[in-house]
Amino acid sequence: MDISFIITLFIIGLIGSFLSGMLGIGGAIINFPMLLYIPAALGVGQFSAHEVSGITAIQVFFSTIGGVIAYRKSGYLNMKLIAVMGISILIGSFIGGFGSTLLPEKTINIVYGVLALIAVALIVIPKKGTVDVPLGQLVFSKGIAASLSFLVGIAAGIVGAGGAFLLVPIMLTVLKIPIRVTIASSLAITLISSIGTIVGKISTDHIAMLPTLIIVVASVIGSPLGANTGKRLNTKVLQMIMGILILATAVKVWLDIL
Image 1 (cartoon, rainbow, N blue to C red):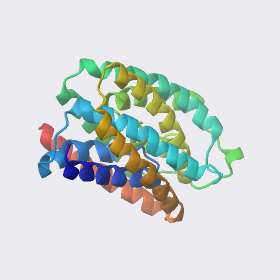
Image 2 (image 1 turned 90 degrees about the vertical axis):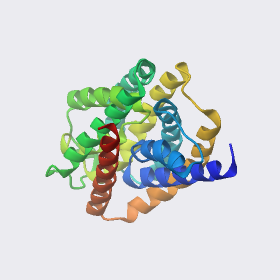
Image 3 (image 1 turned 180 degrees about the horizontal axis):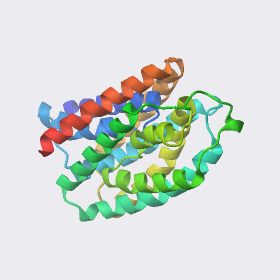
Image 4 (image 1 turned 180 degrees about the vertical axis):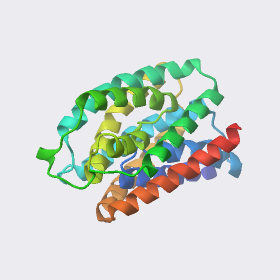
């Protein structure tokens, strides 16, 4: 592995983790296509979809740790929401992560593309009831939250994601969770999800250790910076940035698939 490859991986990890901390996502929605396309386009290296999903699984774990730490004193972490969705997504992500070994690379890319399109659709749907409210007054359906997070866990586990890029719009649109509570709590839920995904990926031997280590180091630096930046941005700006990033990624992936 030459120095240009190492620098490229570090920059990819830094960008992905910064955005993950700022937007309350695990970073896989950004890092998956960047790792799949950028090293190959620059001629410094190439990863398979299976290798990328393994790298992003561990990257998500470390980037969300930094984000959760940054939000720990913010008052936006809802423990009831985290417990209900965290347990369900943990089970689902392990199933998806372990089952990914049975799928061809194209199928993994298709799953990613479908998840991205669903996330974009949820973001553009008009939302009601997402203004900030005291945590003690927050009400949501535990059954719906658990069911949806389980399904997200399975799909996200396949592509090595924590699922936050889909969880965030679901929490905003379906569960009507305020955006700042959504961003903070989704980081914690994604952290739990990534544990199941990592266990599944390790059991299928889809982890490239040195590239993963480089991405992780960058994530530890970038995620807290992104989280602190996100606290100062207008909520509508956060949603707009999220929508643009996911849409651009979905278009690129589907163009390659088709």
